Length: 544
Image (cartoon, rainbow, N blue to C red; front, side):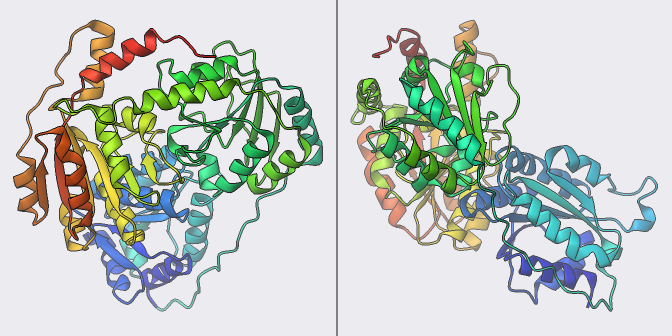
């Protein structure tokens, strides 16, 4: 058995179903070994697309997505997607071929020190220099990637090592790692703070999504009657329709949900990653009591001094606390929820054109079932989607909010559809982010992975334009032109639609979602609403 065959068998033992990537000279043996494997190789059109596919698969399934590149430029093209996965806590194992070990010590064609390149953007980066360590390396890469604070890992596989034959090794069988239970002392200390609280508020983060702990959160909030605000990446962890949901927090501006944090005397941070939403934006005074509930210790931040905390399995910690703490009866947050819901839906049926972001989101929500998946790119549309797109289930609106890289939506939608073919998938993207990885439409068509690409078209880097207008009252070098997106879609054999009236969007979405192909919807957006929102929030009077 070749080292490459052993390597692939180790991937099979980890339950890998898809590898996303591009073949190259230095991964020839691995590519050949995959022909006799149960693993499906998804040939992408750019390594960045492959990394984003692995990233989104990791977030949606909880199991490490895998991407593969050759050495040099192939490996460097993985970097953005790998960094995104690592900072968003998405489990990913990235693999790159490498030149033969007999030329790594000197200046050599396409050779870079890949381990040192990936070290700062992964949880673990290593090189296979001996075929006998392959089972250990692969097992560790997956164990670390899928750990309590999941993220990206990297394996460099030199071509001459991959080619070594006559091996008689076997994979290491993965073992389920049990998350520890919190201590009784810590639970009792938290209960004391909860029982003394007058206006407690829960800040629910992506850690709850990673732990599949939505039911435990809902039960905890209901039993103690404490409202919940979620971060961008935790959308749906508390159903938007639930009377205790205050929606999504995360804008840099002081939004309506921020009023809840202003009034809270105790903030219960559950599965909260500060990379998403720094404490200084919701805890400027640094004088509130903070309860921390997570699997690993909290990050250090001057505005995040913890009063009490517990480390352990959410599905154990939250029920234990719910059974011991008192139920709160103060209903001031009900008035806040009413106001939040009112402003979220006030433009659901607006008919102006270009279409307001609020109407686009309302129609998108109407077109999708609760289980369907939206992959949101990065840009001005991301802030609108994060703030206003209501989710009833976790992992139904995927947003990159740690590294926050443009270009994730389209390749991410490919992975979402391949892994969940029974669910409808929509890539929500700006025109700029769309063109960064639009080549992956060909991948989707070839893999027969139908989904809808909803382009918010403003012919500008809209988020930067918004910031420039806010700070300087003028813009600088943000405008560009676009191709005809309908013809662009047709060039790939896909479908294309252009929206010319607000009333066309919902029926077009419904038509596109019913078709068994990739569909682009070119939707002009009225981003004058950006500055209007900034002004509105600046003049906002808190209702509580």
